[in-house]
Length: 486
Image 1 (spheres, rainbow, N blue to C red):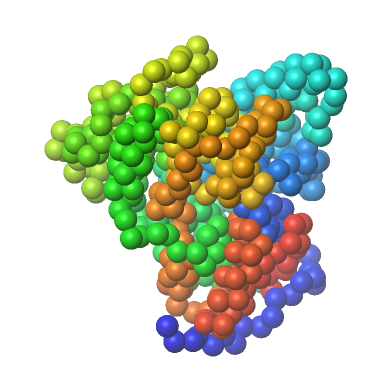
Image 2: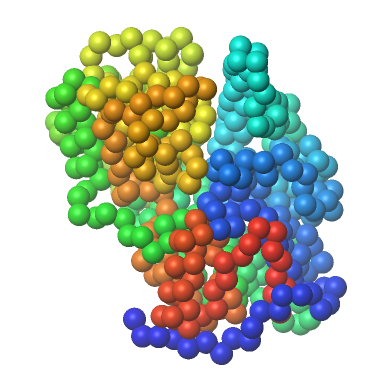
């Protein structure tokens, strides 16, 4: 691609006027999780996302007081229903936020499920840790208490005012926000905020998490031809998804080989989107006779609830999924799929004497039932641990993917002897070339591109490429760094 030169003036790093547009980065800075941005524009203070930090090195940030007064916010906008984008909303409300929270209708329904599940997992983990610490006579690094409770979640959901795609939302006299389909998960959105300051109009685009084109069930991501400033995720940096083998073919190969060894396929699963996408693919493979009809388990009450939300929000489905529905296929179910609700049902899975496919949350192995399944399966060489999503630095999933010989689970070290596989094509995130292609739909050079939501190496590599190939100004913000969008 030919290099495009930019004549953009450098960004002003210090505010010069009280009514200047200011943007502060409060998470997902040179790391993947904790998405949170504070925008002061048009006389309004707007929070974009309020995500939980999930990397081990940054967990302390979840417990820190808010770096701004939540009572002074005028609105909160949420791009989608993943904990690293919405997981600290109840804490924000507990600290005094009382204005509207805006997300798409599908996102609001999923966030309700997600936050209640998070509160439950926190409560169970806190109880488990207390017992372990009493038994071992020691204290852990983090407080043995929950960040929020079910009651906090109920108060949070009462503040939601859902929005529709492509319909501008006024956030004051000089600011409007429009939610556009991000193609990442059901209800996910990119945000275009249009601000009028000193007689001039500026558009600030927040990419949220950019999905892949051609993914099953949901529609493709939106592209923009105009943006003055862009806050773009960089989860995969410049890396490219492996496209040499179809996702369905990779799934079929892993299942067949593992079953032939007499083992289980254990899939750490994100309850929202990834679980439904796996159901979609496994159903197709079984109908085509490409994999054996072993027991399939979706061991996650939240994933089961999320699947019900998917069925209610068919308006978010793409053309191909509607065609399957019209032909009589059920894209989100198949014979032999068992959705487990209770802890007893979950425990019973590990007493099976025959091979099985076990999908359980969480996707990065940070909490939930997947840890128990890893304890029972990780040290058996006939089994396969199959990762179908990004594993953030410092997470248990990342340790396993990176080839750790043993890992700590529930206070004990376990040897990793199972086969470890990873399918990148499943990712809900666009890869590096796709992110660049998405960005290059903008016809005139933005004044600045801010790269977030990626490891520091990914962010810097992508920023360097944008500067070298396109001549655009690209920043990699630091935690709590502020910019004035001059």
